[in-house]
Length: 352
Image (cartoon, rainbow, N blue to C red; front, side):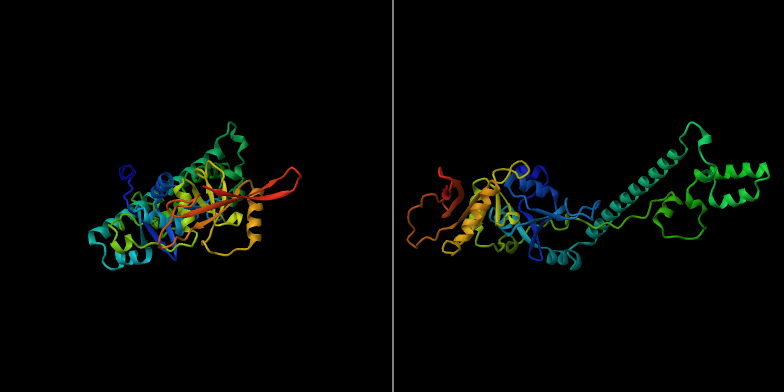
């Protein structure tokens, strides 16, 4: 497993960053790796730079449930890092040597210059396409004269309409303005415009300001023992979550269906969920109407309603209960079915 992780640049244990009591992953390689190897998907919460005004399609970072983060830490493949504290230690407390800081700043500048060049190229291509669309015609008589003359030259053209020489001169000037950048007619004074500095000089363009999306390579140091074994706090439903995950299910937040988790038999991109899952303490009391409502809701959306929890054992141990596992977790499915008389009845099935 570790060898396969190394082939795509993943070093275990990898960091899970905690920020404002949320567990976040910023590295797309780590996100795809845990989805493929550990059946953990998380939830995308970041906006897309090219479409920031919508929230239908989201991007990095990925937020993990506390249960997902706890499971990865218990498996020894991840460790929890306090994002704020670690950044302060690395960037504000001389955590980086002068050479590392210079290399980091040079890398950001290189990315900014590349982004500026790409933006400049796109602008130039748009202008070139627009000019081609204006002048690419078989009959030059189809082009109005007003389009070929600048606004400043139209008044001169109207005042000197009687002379043929002035007309020819005006047309020639209009041709020049069509194939000349507008910055050539700007006042000859210093400007801070990025476009002007790029067009008026052949030197390297002013770099864009780049905001890093990951903390690599600054936070690639080995985790401290305290960080390695700090376990995220989890709700009482964690034993049931861990039990279903051990059985090979993908689990996702179940808020859409009024439950804690949705259990998928495979990757959620390929399968529909099979169970609406609620985890409880073994001696926790609950209303029978909640059980009936969950069972009917699950049947209405073509899923089974599953409840379960970890059975408390006596100090003397005891035999393994039927339907349980080594962790003492027992699960039950609630379904609704019709009898021959047409009435509905609730079936509680022991999930093994």
